[in-house]
Image (cartoon, rainbow over all chains, first blue to last red; front, side, top):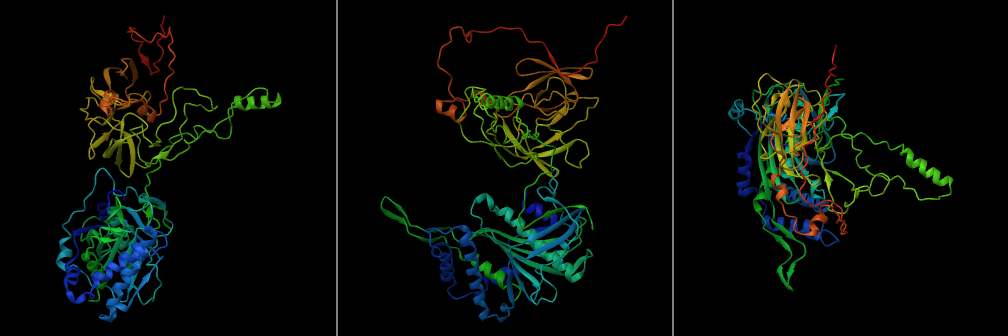
Length: 311
Length: 302
């Protein structure tokens, strides 16, 4: 998308807050929520995904990105020993989302195959307080004159305004909890840049939240008393983008009134470099193979987003 | 079912797509090879292949894209050869591979569904174009993006204006704006001039060039081209204000023969032609003014 997150903000009528919300940050800092020697485990996970998992010398991004994701989810699920309600979650892949909304006389849609969704039985409680929600009323959405906000979107004739979460009614795990996006194309031009990835995360989190809201509260545009929160994590194997999106209102036609909120934490590196083959200069090993520049905070935030809602 | 045109993101991928403009290139007639060549081939076949006849080649059939796009399009080099396959222009061949970026020379191209009013656009990016000496600028306005020839001092983030309105008073034009010649004050430096309204800029496009608006005479305007030739066009023809970018292009030093080869220029013949007439200063009167205006013929009455 052209302007990145700013354009997505205008399209979804959202206000941006830098950093993660305080409820998630409190989970990050709380030592009771951590695994024992998690640093060692995460390092082993990264080495497995980036170094050991393949028969060739260097695994390709298409290969190591999903492996890394699976292992991180596995580590998070080990926490369910302490919190049994974590078992009430499931992962869904290749499901289609459809959400339609009107934004100042332009009809917009989000459709199609998503990333990987994690659903849970219970919804996440709203993150922002009532005062913060009311405070977004004064916030003015930024426009980029002379560029219209619909630049770079594909124009399609719609024959049916569809709103569906992708699951049928009566499914026990009905609330979208977290969306995961893996940028695993091999060639760089096929992958999204970080700001484009964040915009994509925002749009799909919004689509999921909106579809759920329309299922729960009907199709009329109005403000929600119980805001819906959807989280989102996007990665390309090394950089992580964390996002918490709260849907406050489905009244998106006008640009005034309360806005939705999004907290974004962008460009968190999990590790600096993963050396597959040791670098040798002049017959002397300068850099042995391994993981360099590991940052434990990124995994703590990943875990905090996973635990958010049940803790 | 609501048949409103919706804007949709499909399959988790956000695709770049500009509103479709009028076709950039007319589709070449692939189905009818030039009759002369076909006749020649047939004639050769009848005479039992007496002489060799050039067969039809596939040049320049990379130019078959109808819809405008911002992405660079791969192009095929001709090497100076025309559609028969023989060399028509000497000294062309080799050189670095280039991708063609489709430049929109018609500044006043309105978006689909937009009213024919003056509109503004924002310059996003100015970059080098391998296919020409000038730099090109990516501008975005409304819901579309396009490439245009950048003028001197065009920076990312500038706002440029395109207008077709001719007022009674001349407009103080900023550099990079596009106005019809009738709206500009005389003496302004212009570039990207068109000979007929709506045709698209064909003159003054090289790096650092500029034309001067000399005078305006009833419905026409007279412009001096960089070759000091005068040109008369209708005043509704649109031109951009300012000099073309990359002004120091003529001051660059090639430095070595290899750089010319990278540019795709093959060496000249080394034979000295005694009566070539290339040396010495040449003094010639200016050619007459070229007029692209069809004035009603003034017939002497009575």
